[in-house]
Amino acid sequence: MDQFDLIVVGSGPAGRRGAIQAAKLGKRVLVIEQGKRVGGVSVHTGTIPSKTLRETALNLSGWRERGFYGRAYRVKQEISAADLRRRLLITLDHEVEVLEHQFARNRVQHMRGKASFVDPQTLQVVKDDGEVLHVTGASILLAVGTKPFRPDYMPFDGKTVLDSDELLEIEDLPRSMVVIGAGVIGIEYATIFSALDTQVTLIDPKSTMLDFIDKEIVEDFIYQLRDRNMKLLLGQKAEKVIRQNGKVELLLDNGRHIVTDMVLFAAGRMGATDTLNLAAAGIEADNRGRLSVNPETFATNVPHIFAAGDVVGFPSLASTSMEQGRIAARVAVGAIAKEPPKYFPYGIYAVPEISTCGLSEEEVKERHIPYECGIARFRETSRGHIMGLDTGLLKMIFSLKTRRLLGVHIVGEGATELVHIGQAVLNLKGTVEYFVENTFNYPTLAEAYKIAGLDAWNRMGDIKSEL
Image 1: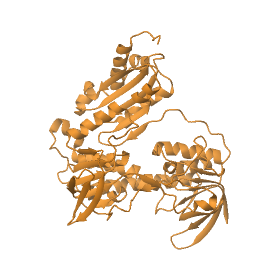
Image 2 (image 1 turned 60 degrees about the vertical axis):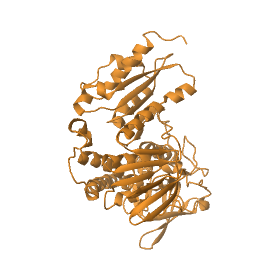
Image 3 (image 1 turned 180 degrees about the vertical axis):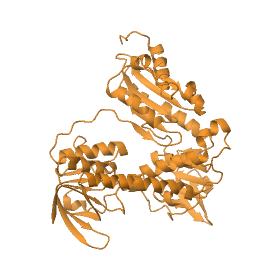
Image 4 (image 1 turned 90 degrees about the vertical axis):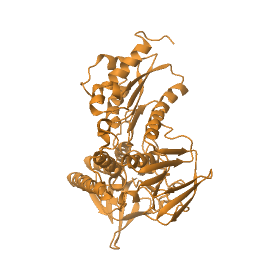
C-alpha cells in the first residue's frame, strides 16, 4: 500500500493547483483522476471548452465586425459543428500537455482510476483494466468538481435534449434552441448560439437573472439580448418536454407551447461525490452533492480531509478554485497559508461578457454607505469606435466619505480582461483620484476607466463629504 503526504482526488483547477503547491513544499503527492486525461471538468467539458466554443463562434460568425459591415456579415458562410470542434480539440490537447508537464516538472505522481474511501485515510482506486489499488494519505484533498443536474422528468437523448456536457458533441448546429436555466452556464451557451444566428429562447422559473450582479449591468445585458431577438421567458417553467418527429415540444406552466430543434437543460449542477463512499470517511454531502468546509482552511468535518473547487459551492470559478486548492494544500501539509485578497473578479463569458469585482450598488445601499457612481460607455472611447462597438458599459462605485473605489462592474467586449484594473485598485484601497490623475493608453477600452472616474469625480466634487 503506497503512502503519500497528500492525495488529491481530481485534477481540475483546485486539484492541480493544490497538488503542485504541496509538491513545491517537498511533499509526496498523488493525484487520482477518473477521466481519460488529466484536467478535470474545467479542461474537458467546462471552462476551457465553453470559452473556446465562444471564441470560435465569434470569429467564424464575424460577430465583432458586424458593427461596421452589418448583421448579415459572416467570415464563414456555412458554419458547422465540426468547425467548432476543430479548434476545441487543438486547445484541449495543449491544455493537457501543459498540465502533464507541470506534474512531471514538480514530481507529482498521477494515476487514472475511480477513487472511493475505505476508511478516513485510505482510498481504493479501481483502474480501467479492473486492477484495484489501495493508497493512504496523511491528508486528502477532494477536488472532484461537479456534473450536470439531470432530473428524471427531462427526456435526455444526447441529440435533441442535452445537458451542457453533451452539447459539446452535437453533430449539427440547430436552427432553433430552447435553453432551460438562466444561470451562468445557461446564459453563456444561449448567447453563444444566438451569435451563431440560432433562434434562442431562454426559460427560467425565476423572474430575474444573475441576482449577484449589479442590477444596472444586468438591465443593460438584457436589453442587448432582446435587441438581437433572443426570447427571454423569465418567471415561466417548462412543465413537460416531449420529443417527437425530430423536434422537441415544451409545455410551459402558463399554457404556452414551444416547438424547437434542440433543448439544452442547464438548470444547475451537482457535486460529483456520489461514488466516493463518503460515509466510510465520516463525511456527508448535501442534497446537491456539495461538501461543507471551513471557508478559511477548506477542511471538512474530518480534520485531515479537505475539499476545494466547485464541489464546495459558490462562487464555482476556475480562478477561485485554484486559490482554494492552493490554500487547502498548504494547510493540509502544515504550511502557513496567507488569507487571499478580499476582492476577486467574477467573469461571465456570455456574448457580451460580464465581469464584476467588489460591491454592487444594491450591496452598497444595504450597508447604508453614502456613495456616487461613475459610468462610461464604450462608444465614448476612440477604441470603441475603431472596433465598431455600439454597446458596452463600465460602472464604478465610490464612497463619498473615503472616496475609495467600492466596486467595478462591466458589460461588453473585453470585460473579463478590463476588470483587473479595477480589482487592483480595490485591493490596494485606491480612490477616485487614481482614475482622474493617471494616464491610460490611447486608444484603448481601458480609457473607459478614466471617463467613468471623471464622471464620478464631477458628481462628487473635489471635497470629501462630511456625511
